[in-house]
Length: 109
Image 1: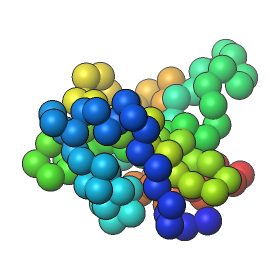
Image 2: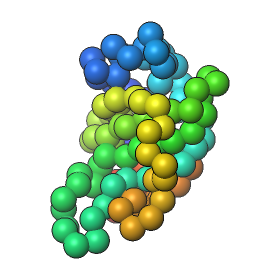
Image 3: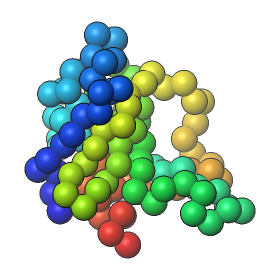
Image 4: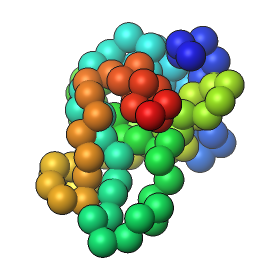
């Protein structure tokens, strides 16, 4: 699957006045790089969805976290927010790559 179809949730779209527009979110997922990871729990299997990822980076001059899900027929942007967590590295986050395409590949495993 490539990122042909991106759906932006109502929650993410409502934040366009503070962060990115739906069109900008689509462009970021298709063309930009950052730090892509997913939440994990070393002590609890299946606690977090295997298809939900966070893309952290600077996009259009804003430091953002974009939370998205890889689904069978689309990539769905769940929300966007300022980088409120100090780190997305550590035992509760699994690094999967630098692009949304890397998340798609990882979700297929």
